[in-house]
Length: 458
Image (cartoon, rainbow, N blue to C red; front, side, top):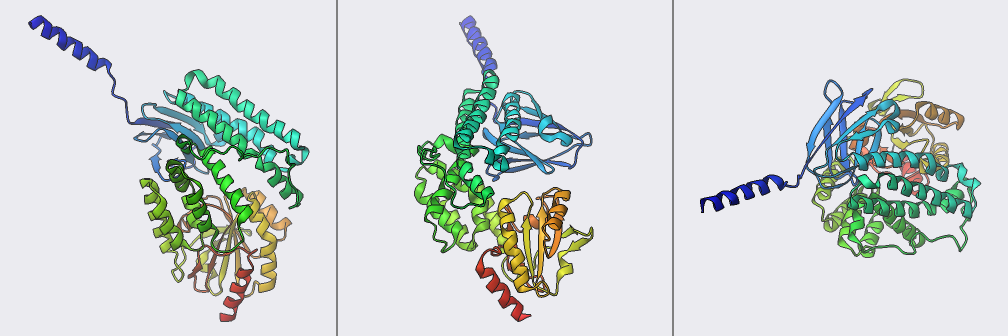
């Protein structure tokens, strides 16, 4: 009996030792060469979760993270890159800020997926740019579709190189991602060609593939893919463009479209979390957008982020003092917002690389001429751009008003105003109090009426 008990004990002991409990955490660490900041940021792709990791004196960092498997962003300085993190798969990254994308290298159990993503990002950088520049004019429909196919095939070939070291789940996600990335490129042919040609009547032929012909609105697993959610956003935007009459609040209308079109709860919740910052930021009826989002969202982290963002909006209510800034002017002086008191201030946050921003410039120049810069201070803040590009663009295009340069998106002024997309416009009174933290664009005729009424009160 004693021998049987001993044998059973030994068996159970060996079984217990050989049965590993699945880890619910991973260690994320790294080494930065030529550091530009003392903190590394990690966020999920919907930016509802964020983790700041400080750098040690030797420019290394390390932290233990409890998170769900999925796509994340690593942000450092003005750069960022996509990651795939999963519990039990430690990741160590090395990078050089002087060649951020090219220097990325990962080691550890989670290295294969991330080295693949880094290589995929470089591949896209070298190929996809043709679709979003004047190079698009060199392609007819057949040539464009061949280009898209070649980009897609290159991605699939890259995935095959890494396939033996990747999990089946990650392979499925990437195969789906590549599929939706391909579909998302198709509308760019008509959109970008018509924009560059300045021909709003330009259309693709009836034979051109419809990227939304076989849209999948039911498979919940797709909700974990940034590429799918971006594709879904494009689909809903295209549908709204067909039916939008320009009346009412476009962000609220978009929210209602999501609620009625997306019937899968997992997809709906992921899409709402993904779009929540923009939907709240671009709404002219912040309270209504907040309450509708709050009623629809189920994700707890997204709800917490919504609450935090809404509280910041409360601080931006009309009549509250505007947050201050200190930016460099075209002449090299440091200008603070407090220096501009005495006249109402209309602020345009823009960049030379932002197409919609550039589209507003002729309307802004006309507004400055019609209203008069002696009555209102027109301030343009160029955000996260190349300093030389900014100076050259302002001078070559003879832009009026006061021009300031802001090298980082993460500046407290932009965070305070919840600016997650540009162009963004702000209107202040002569005392620096907020009139509208999300003001109308120069192309909106109602803005001119609002400014003319404001001038009469001076």
